[in-house]
Every structure is written in C-alpha cells, then in structure tokens.
Amino acid sequence: MDYIPHGAEDIRRMLEFIGISSPDKLYSDIPEKIRIRGYGIGKGVSEPEIKNILEEFSGSNASVKTLKSYIGAGAYEHFIPAVVDDICSKPEFYTAYTPYQAEASQGILQSIYEYQSMICELTGTDVSNASLYDGATAAAEAALMSIGKNSGGIVGISSAVNPVYRKVIETYLKSSPCSVSLVGHKEGITDIENIEKQVSGRMFSFIFQSPNFFGCIEDVKTVSDYVRGRGALSITVANPLSLGVLEAPGRNGADIVAGEGQPLGIPLCFGGPYLGFMGVKKELMRKLPGRIIGRTTDKDGKEGFVMTLQAREQHIRREKATSNICSNQALMALRAAVYMAYMGKEGMKEVGTLNICNSHYLADEIEKTGKAALKFKRPFFNEFVIEFRNNVEEVFRAFEKEGILPGIRLAEEGQNSILCCVTEAKSKSDMDKYVEVVKKL
Image 1 (cartoon, rainbow, N blue to C red):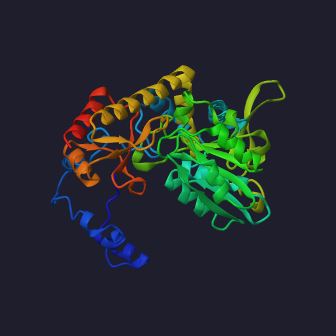
Image 2: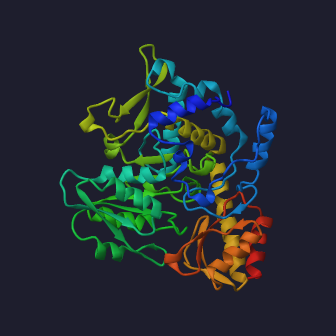
Image 3: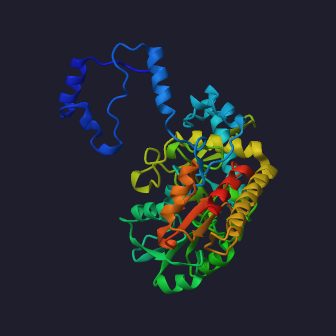
C-alpha cells in the first residue's frame, strides 16, 4: 500500500495524544525559507494523476546525474555493477539477514565470512568483524578499543583526518578515561614532529588517515613505526578502493585499519545507510565490536558457518559488551562482498588506477590554466586541494551556472581553497568542461 489515508477525526486524536495543535508543528525544526506550502494539487485528484504530479515535482531535485558533482570528503560517486543490485535483491538474502540461527542462515553467514576474508586481504590485517555503521563510527570504535583501563592516557588524532570523523571520535571519547589531542599537519600530511610536541604523556593510540581528508597519501609505515615505538596503537583510516593500488596499511605497521566501505558497491543514498569496515591484528581480536563469523565442520565433517564471537549486550554481560551493532549491517556487508568478489583483485586495481588517472588529469589541466594551483605538492589518490586566484564565491557562482558542484570549500586551508574529488565515474568530457569554467574565471 502506497499510503494510509487518515480522516479529520483520526488526525485530531493523534495530535491531541502527542500534545500539539497542528501537523505543521511536526516540521517546526525545518527553516521556514525551505518549507513547501502545498503542492498545488487541488481536490479530488486520482491516484494516477497525483503520481504524475509528484514525479514531475521530484524532477526539480538535483542529483549526481543532473548536477555534475566533484564533492567527496567521505562519500563518493562510483559505478556500481548491475550484479550487485541483482544478487542483493534476492529474497533469500534480504529476508533472512539475521544470522542468529546458524542452521537456517548458512547463506548470509557465508556471505559475511567472505566479506571478512576480503577485508582482511584488502587491509593486511588478521581479523575483521561483520561491519559497523559507517566510517566515522568505525574510527571511533577503533579509538575505544585502544583505551587502557587506567585513566590519564591520550588518544592522538591527526588534523588531516576527516573533520566529521574527528567530531564523532571526540563524542565517543567524551566520557572515557582519556583525553583527545589534535595533532597538526604539515603541508597536507601528518607531521611526526608535531606528535612529539602536541602529545605529552602516555598515548593509547594515534589515528591518522591515508589517503587523508586533503587527498594526500600518508607515509603509513613511518607514522606507524613512530607511534608503536611510543607504546601506542597505530590506527589508520583508509579508503578501501585505494587499497587496490596502495600497500595495505596492516602490512605497513597499522594495528587497526578502519574506514568507510561506501565505495564498495553502495550508492550515495543521501548519506546512508553506509558501511564501516574494520580489520585488526590477531591480538586485538577479542576487543572487536560487532560480531565475527567463523568457518567450522559439523559432526559429519560438513563445512558450516557460525557466529564465533559476539560482543553485543544481548549476548554477553552488559558490562563486558563492546558493541550495539545491529543485524541490518549484514546487508551492507553483503553489497561490499558481492562488489569485491565481482571486481576481483585486478578489477579493484583497475578502478583504483582510473581514480588516480582521472584526478591527476583534472589537477594538471586546472594548473595549466594559470587560474589555480595545487595547495599541497604531495602524491594523492582521487582528491586534491586546489587554490584559486579568484574569490571562492565567484568561483562557485561560475560553476553553478554550468550545473557543476566544483567541490567543498576549505576556508581553514586558505581563503580560496576547494577540495575536489574525481572518480572513475567522470568522463574526459566532464573534466574538460570543468577546466573550461576555470579558464573563463
């Protein structure tokens, strides 16, 4: 059923029950200037007519298809093979995703097991859990894992980590027995000297991102070796697609690798639901949040899959629980597993290479115009910070006229700096149009 109509008396009783005078009060948090007062539908309109009216109305919304977007910063436009939607839409998956009854859920349990195996291979870690909510909370859960029982310790975070992730981490740690120390970056990457200067005392862990918020590729091994040399855990936030071409952080010294799995076959979807992934070294396995699926054999020697470790409060004593991750995250893990299995090692490498080639092509062409230059002269994956000579407001107005979102303004990195993202979803003609706008500034 598309909708359930309510009569005037039904509406009156519901409003009276929740203590408000009119349905408009339900939307009081929405600013008046963006609220719509009616759709001009009129009275007595049939269902086919009202569907046509609403579909026409929805056509006024911009999307990545109608408005060329170069915004990244944690959520990326990627091509999703049709096989992902096809397999994930099968009823045997989406109606049986709760893996509590192993005897009835072998299919979804195996899909999670395969997801975990591929995440371990991609990140270079020993153990992966069965997915988290998103990249920000995955990074925050990693921070919680690193905290010791004694108070007085510090979790260090590089200022080159996505600012949204930093806020979530700080919120998670607000009531924990530790403090958070923000470590400044130097020329777009984490500066080890700043760790020494800005983190005094015992450090539980240090969190950095590669490719980081500015798109720059960090020296994971050097940072990890330094952090571990101080007795702390190295936590790397990574873009999983970049690991098709970059060395796995776990093989470069990272103890925990976490991040946003949205690039692995999950559409933008106005911000969610997304997928947080996490891989850890074996010694941290029992601190992992969520659940871990294992492979075993039954009494007849047949292969089977079971929930090996469960860290939710409904499974173990509340005081020992480390997670409240819900079962529906298995559906997101399924999408990622299908995407990675379909792409394979060579496919992941090819997509990663396309991201590098496209982003470097656009960055080079922009610099050739003489109207803008790269802010950081560092290797980058699919994002880069470009600094325009023109006022940034003028830049955005010029792009808006052409139906292009040029990126995200980074006022703290320079008055006219923009973070620009290019993936394999952009064609050469798309990028050339971007350059033409820059030339006309």
